[in-house]
Length: 154
Image (cartoon, rainbow, N blue to C red; front, side, top):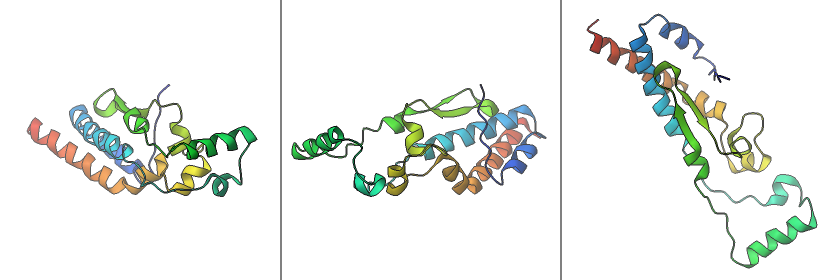
């Protein structure tokens, strides 16, 4: 099932791109997808938020014991980089899809499913990140079209 991300303010860009030859659309798609992949791989700065602040306390005694045992034996907030490595592109050109195949990605950066802890830490959501970078995305799409038109000699 295809996924279509609509960025507020860029619907006009999509309709403008439809007027250009497929080569120009593909060049714009490649440039934009490379940029989107790059910005999605950025991590939020580390910020310690106690579990109690985010959720009001532990859900079970077992969870509380695990957290304190982990702290006692030197456990720390380890960033595995799996979320960053999970961002991938499939397809190419105007039909490129940028996605994340990590099972917990929705809890960290999902628009409707982001966990409260990640919101408090300062993690962005996919739509907010794309919205913040909409102007740069539009500039890259224009540069891609210009590059393709120059190659085509139009």
